[in-house]
Image 1 (tube, rainbow, N blue to C red):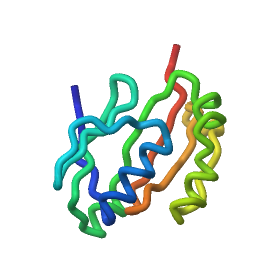
Image 2: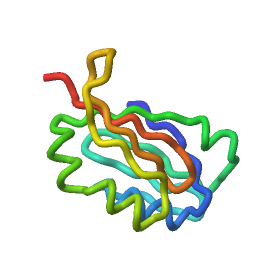
Image 3: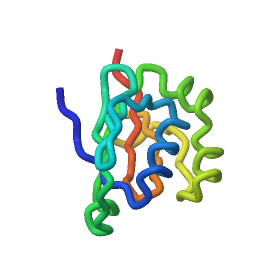
Length: 116
């Protein structure tokens, strides 16, 4: 299992942002919260460095990306948390359907349709 550490400028706000997108908080301490969505997850850390956050890209493959997008409404979540507007899933020139989403710290999520 691979679980990256993801920086949070505002630790509580970031946790709430991810929960609004369907992630479930597991172990939570003052410095780390384990966030999971299905079998995938990451460690949200109460640490922020702008250069790191704004240059970090994480890819998450979702079996039904269109359904996930409809259920979790990333546009509304972005508006609620004041993040950049997401880009709806679209077929990219390299052959994947991808949606793009920024978290409150500037981390870019590359959401892909999982291959069957």
